[in-house]
Amino acid sequence: MPGSGKSSFINSMSMAVTGTWHEIAHYSQSDSSVTKCLERYIMFDENCHEVHEPHPIPDYNNNIIFWDCAGFPDATEEAYSTIVYLTLDGRIPSGTNIIDCMDQTPDELRSKFRSRVDHQMTFDRVVFILSADKVVPNNLVEAIKSGAQQGHDVPIMVVVTKEDKCPNRLHLQKRIEEALAAFKLTGNQVRFKITSLYCEELTPWPDRNDYRVMKPNADIDKNLLTIWMSLTDPNIKAKPAPPPPTPQPQPKSSCVLS
Image (cartoon, rainbow, N blue to C red; front, side, top):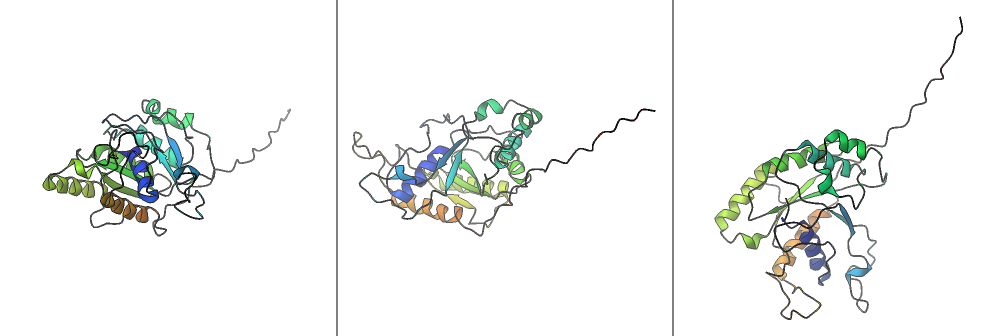
């Protein structure tokens, strides 16, 4: 949902792996999300380290890509499932304003994005970000699950963020149980994770004038790197996208004069 920490999750993951804060995905410090579009971010490219520093992942081939998306309201709108399905099908290009798409009908969306924009585009995971201090959006969960299963059956990984925002352990445990039940992931520790995120409230650099902005946090890094190992687990597989339909030759028409 909006404000759950989707963009912050991308930035925090980069921080955990590289040890240096980079605002790769634009994010908001308030509950209102600034993300309006579907944005493609190549992780750990040459911008993830200072010029005089070695790359944190030697021989990295820029083959990990996160797609950040606008937050959806908690509703079982068929349009939301359709947006997810069309994105996973490679039809919605990066930079598309998703907020504007939410008011369109599924038929309008399918017509608008009827051409596949990238035949090579594949998605290996859907990461559903839940905020620990918010009620589990059960309606939205069903909508996203439906969209992820249409034609591709892309595995959904659930990350409960902002653990620090829910200091009452009983409340946190209740959120965890509700989320596990909603996604039917009870007992699945590989695809269900809990963490805090890097933010100016929790991990600010002592000197506000310092360019580094965020101070490394070993506990957050440990959680995020565990998530990273699950995200890159080759044993979790998605079905390949079906090939585009081959145009069938039209029979030649005949004119008969009788």
